[in-house]
Image (cartoon, rainbow, N blue to C red; front, top):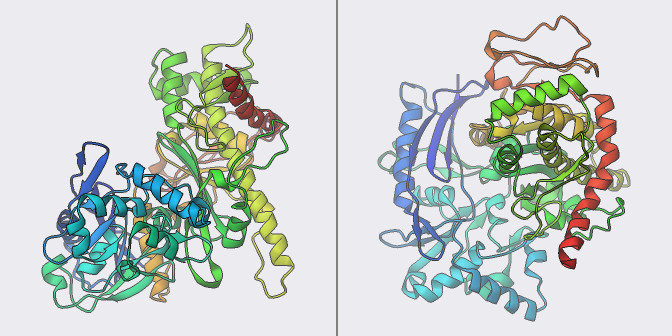
Length: 576
């Protein structure tokens, strides 16, 4: 079966796999590379390590395969500053490097003096991790290196493309994370580049498609990567875009929730919808339950160019799994996640599905969404003499779910505004409706998705059917999808969230979940068709959890009060 060779140059390792056009995948291979940290918040990698790891991973993926791949598709970590020089490469300054705080402040002031709001221009809050600020710092600390630069790329994917002799390129998703891209136009900002001292000819070419063929391998590809000549090379979106494409796709309204140490809701929005929400850059929570949360509290990344420009809006919680870990230590005596889940199951058996009646903010280390407040802290309110420790733990999980629900409601409001705008245009394609987006399963990834009680809470709080999706290979799946479309191939590839079967049944409020202990054994046949189920066909299919209608109504009624709690706690802190 014809296959695509997919490569993900991630934060700590290169991963590669052959993915056939029928959706089957060969063995995945990986090879790691180190990160060097320095005093003052420096974080660097050697681009030569990227090439070494890429060659090793590609060799592992191709081992045993006799068929020539159709193309090489590449994604990778974003927002790195990589100077292209003659001779030995300069160290790549990573997205996590924070040494340029002073330079970021200088850039902000210089742009403000010219009437430019840097955050508004870039579509995101800019700080020390901006590549523009990194370059300005480097020009001061190592001017000789900057003088030798012949070009700039912003991650290992762009570096690899350059090393293949295909020029300097950058996908628009990665570009939108640099602080140098105008969010509204999708072009490099001359204002920011000038303020940072970056000559225009140093900036790479921007891709115009989700996946773009940037050239073909030459005769030296064998020595460099062990690849044949004349192989099409596709530059896929940076890792955030490729992961979203691999999990749910990139159509407006597609979304997924991540519950790891931190958490977020990632939503694909049209450029018009994103721009309309960007008009306000701060959340002003009135405490009345009727205010709108501004997309200014979310991070936005471009996903394409041209007439169908879209953005990926990421509404990030600073603590999701971290809040759950803290709550187990604080309220359950350090219980393991599995032990806590058993206590949640027992609580649900006693009280049924529904809200605890408590309101909790999970903001143990400040917050990014739905408010930007580094000083905000966690809280649980509404306790009485009957409140137990497991109630407090469940309330914290509800608090994380409520924050995700706030982001979902904001996204749905944007989609509704977009639909209204499109309905006014006779030539516009029909938009996916608010109702259609709301009724689609919410894909959930990350360690928190392993907790079945938490997934039921999330389904009940958001009112969305929850579908847990394995995320390990999502960026590689996104690579394959981007390449297949770029090459115009007929294929049966689809995002991971679409690979599970139709295993959704409506819950009975009194029925508990029936959990398949071995998802590889095949789908469950539920003895009671009216009962809620968590089902799957194999580990990759994940679990699907339907919301309980009564529980949904209870959580929905509490949502305005939960929203108001952010402002109330901020006011309380200010008064102290």
